[in-house]
Image 1 (tube, rainbow, N blue to C red):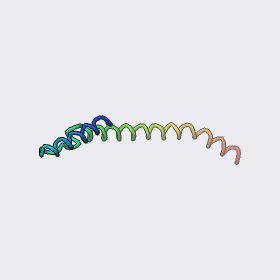
Image 2: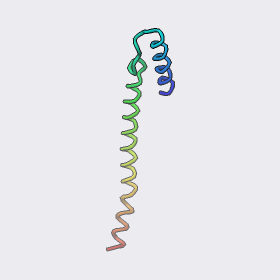
Image 3: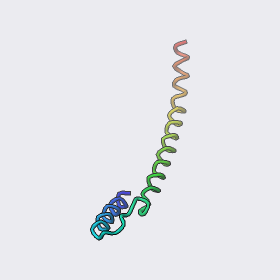
Image 4: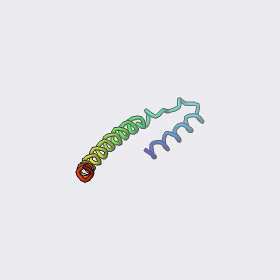
Length: 68
């Protein structure tokens, strides 16, 4: 993504200097990369949350038994 962002920056500067149409993020696939990155982050975050809840469940059960 960093390389594509730099390429977009350079292409924008070149196009502006030539008076050409300025490129946008879709020309470099940055919108697709960001969308996929968010999907991966969301799914990884959900998996981490689920595994954390599963790991915490036995501790909560034991704590209730001790305090009852």
